[in-house]
Image 1 (cartoon, rainbow, N blue to C red):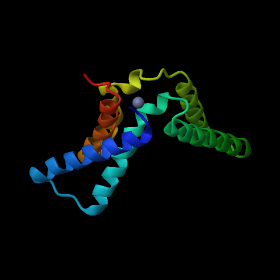
Image 2: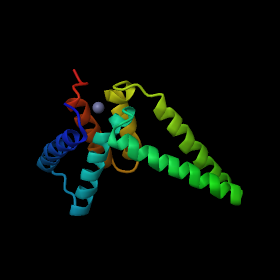
Image 3: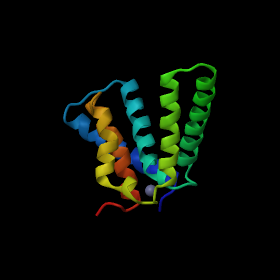
Image 4: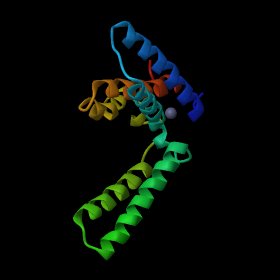
Amino acid sequence: MGGYKNHIIASLLLVVLVSWVLMKIGFTADFRDLVFCVILSVTYSLLPDLDIPTSRIRRLTSRLLLTSSLSCLILVIQKTNITLLLICLASTLLLYFFWSLRHRGFLHTLHWAFIMSLPLGFFNLTWFLFAFTGYFSHLLVDRQII
Ligand SMILES: [Zn+2]
């Protein structure tokens, strides 16, 4: 039942549910925070399909990484800079990492949803919650939970 549209719709439904629960327990947020959390949740709802070579998120991410890698490589050749070199290497390694992924492997697990969302929790607990909600909604739609 996958498909990026279904994942976006599922994440939006879960965002509404989580927002409603948060409001019931007294959480308040301004409009900008809420919009950011919705964008975060929708983005995270698409991340598990990075393991599908033909998925939109994979194609977009691969193009960004390839562009980043080549741009940094050209800049490193023109002007030696260790930061640019590290960005080039990281982008290239991530591209290589994507090629080795198996569909519905570890990216489609609950503990990976937690690991992917956790860094946001160091900045803002609400960001973590909405990122996890988006990732979780993807797993629900793909029936990777239970
Ligand atoms: Zn999936």
